Image 1 (cartoon, rainbow, N blue to C red):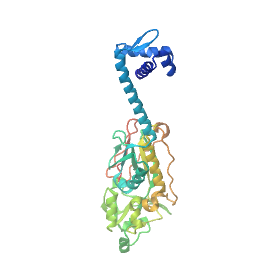
Image 2 (tube, rainbow, N blue to C red):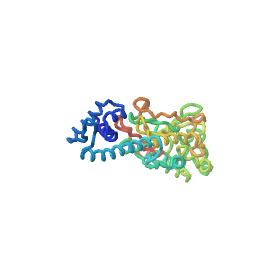
Image 3 (cartoon, rainbow, N blue to C red):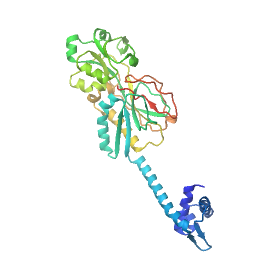
Amino acid sequence: MDHLQSMRVFVRVADLGSFARAASAMDISNAVATRHVADLEGRLGTRLLNRTTRSLSLTESGQVYLERARQILDELEDVEQMVVARNHEPLGSLRIVAPVVFGLHNLAPVLQTYAQRYPKVVPDVTLVDRQVDLVEEGFDVGIVIARQVKSASIVTRRLTTGCMTVCATPAYLEKHGTPTRPEHLLEHPCLSLPSEYWGDERVFTGPEGEVRVRPQNVIIANNTEMLRQFALLGMGIAILPSYLIGNDTTRGQLVRLLGDYQLPQVEINVAYPSRRHLPAKVRTFIDHLVEHFSQTPNHQLGEQWIRDGRGRPVSAAPARYEHADEHATPAPRSRPIDGEMAPKLSKPSRTRGRVPAASPF
């Protein structure tokens, strides 16, 4: 029989001094209550109650057991209440993992407002440029920047859609001229990611359809923040995430180019281990992320960063916290756009939760 239930029955019998009253209070039969106590005595190898036709009394062993049983049941109730509270009230450590550059440029304002709203939650942020296993490494949520994500044990929710932007300093453009078509990039020194991330060609979509160019790279770096620094120094034309240069363009330090042309987009997702009952801290943080990215002004993330190719706002996906195997459809595998490391995603597995947080996009 259930050991804990037998313990509960014994405590109730001792408190009420009667099997019948204990059985009635616990909504079980008198015979079931008797069997629970008998099973407990059999397991312990000692009598806990002295029974007569008129009364019950505790044996010496029964008195000792009753005292400890009360403590155990009280502690169990406290633990259960604490867990229930955690699922209803956001509190405790919230482990977050994100790509380095994205985290440096985007997470601080999100966490500031979240911490103000939920002061009992302690954000624990890790910024990495490698593949991350959310489950094995104990992360609650991860920011994933890739065209698509595939993992059977991970649920993702879209935050926004990212675009790459061609840009340069006003001083550079004054000296070297302003390109107005993708082909004009061939006449300029370009600052670029390594070919393993995007290949050697850049594919633009514009009024005349698809245009492919192979820029003349003068500097190659696997970190977009470094490419941004090179661009600010006027060393050439760079292709950078719109969010990364939003403040630079607002201040006039960088100028967006080729506005009639679009480069391939990537999705910015929040990922979390699939489970039916998300802790309140995880659920509220995911909602807060979606709210932040849907309401953040354009100058903070870059106009293209939160709009589609036709200038329309990109809405976030509806909330979905169900189990991945039943409700989430994994997308086909693809290569992260940018990253100091860009390992392939692991094959779908019910016990693995790897996501490509390797992108310092």
